[in-house]
Image 1 (cartoon, rainbow, N blue to C red):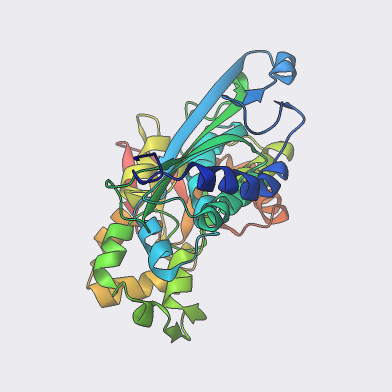
Image 2: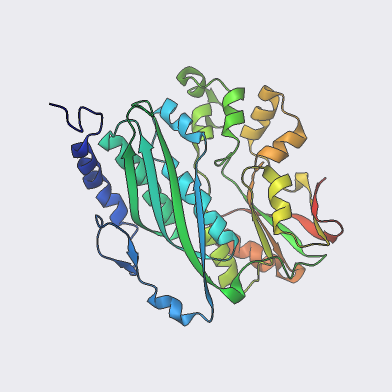
Amino acid sequence: MMDYKKAGVDIEAGYRSVELMKEHVKKTMRPEVLGGLGGFSGAFSLAKIKEMEEPVLLSGTDGCGTKVKLAMILDRHDTIGIDAVAMCVNDIACAGGEPLFFLDYIACGKNEPEKIAQIVKGVAEGCLQSGAALIGGETAEHPGLMADDEYDLAGFAVGVCDKKEMITGENLKPGDVLIGIASTGIHSNGYSLVRKVFRMEPEALDTHYDSLGCTLGEALLVPTRIYVKALKSVKDAGVTVKACSHITGGGFYENVPRMLKEGTRAVIKKASYPVPPIFQMLSVDGEIEEQMMYNTFNMGLGMIVAVDEADVDRAMEAIRAAGDAPYVAGRIEAGEKGVELC
């Protein structure tokens, strides 16, 4: 007799993983969430949006790139979910929005309930850090398509903001100041290059380096910083963020110009903030030239905001109050749209 289990899909394991993840999901609930886990769709009340003049929904979807490969090699699955949430909610915050809810999608070769629950635990932690409710998700077993111990993780977030509070860059002007907010390390971009530079074996990854203050694997797996609270703190302090850039794949050269309007250019001083030691190690071990480093990685700044010169101190104070480290990293000048690192 043939059945679904013999075909490689274990429905019982699916039920068990849902039971295990429920406690993590519960912690992320917001008052707007309607109904419990297990329905066909996640329901979220929009009653509060009526208080806004012109509500705009913002959405973001992303995965963690090949960083999941590292989680698999190290057999550490409780932080990769934070990365998935961070990549989506940071994009929403970057546009001036407040993340409302998140859904995750896990594709795996074989559903191991304990491992899936660990992944979802990380997703829930990311949701807690960003104030988003985890209102749904999907775990799909793909026998024959993926190896038993392999998985991939992606997510989708929806946020809201009043149109008048959207961060668009349209009021950017020469003289505005760029504040960079520290990253926690490599975040979730550039891992295909990272995996070419360092040996992806437990022996190499478990090596402790004094310069890093931890093992190489730990430094590479540090989750992406979530900047939702820092940006909300700036807004609550009455500071207008004129433009904002989330430094992801493509580093400074690709992401900073996205925050600029025509006729403005960003000038960033490389010495204005500390570059985390992991980037130095990457550059030396991989013989990667500086231009390529800044074109691939965040180099220590995960988010860059532009504010009026008069607002710099208040903005810096608000970012610190949220537990983040801000640096005056550069200025906006008149000129051809682009970024100059000096």
